[in-house]
Image 1 (tube, rainbow, N blue to C red):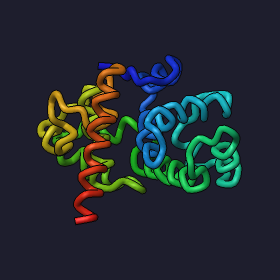
Image 2: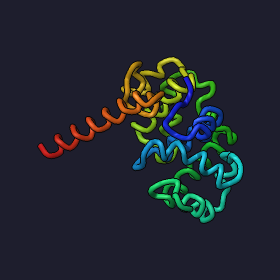
Image 3: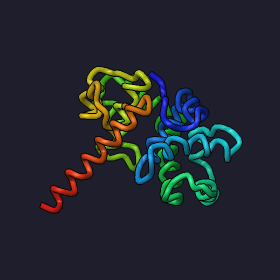
Length: 192
C-alpha cells in the first residue's frame, strides 16, 4: 500500500519516500484537515528549497522556523505552536534515533514497543499514537507482532477511521463519515 491521499501527487510522493514527511504529517494532523496536514511537509520542503532532515529542523532557529510555518498560506492553523512541536519531535528523533525517523519503527519487536516509542514523542497522546501505528502498519508495511492490537480500533482491517485507511476518494468519504459520527455521539453524550 502507498499513500494516495487527496493531495498533490508530489506530496504523496514525498510521503511515500520520506519517513520524516510522514512523521511531520502526523504531528500536524490536528485541528486542520488531513489534506493540509499531509501536504504541509511538501510545502515546507518547497519553502526550504530541499527536503529537510530531522537534525536540520532540530537545530533550526526557532523564530525562523515559525516564520516559515507562518508564511501565507500557513502550514498549520497554529503555526507558532506547531513549528515548535515539529522541532521538539525532530529533536527527539535526532537525540534518540540518530536523526533517522525510520529508526523510530525499524526493528521493533512488538506492536506494544512501537506504540510506546511513538507515545513518547512530544504531543502524542493515545489516539495519535494508535493512528500512527495503524498508518505505519497499513501504508508502510511496518507490522511487528501485535501491531493491530497496539493500534486499537484504528488497526482493524477494513476499518475507515483515520488517515491510515484512506486510499481513494471513497475511503476518504468513509473516514469523514466516521469522524462526523464520533463527534455527534460525543456531543450527544455531553448534552445528556
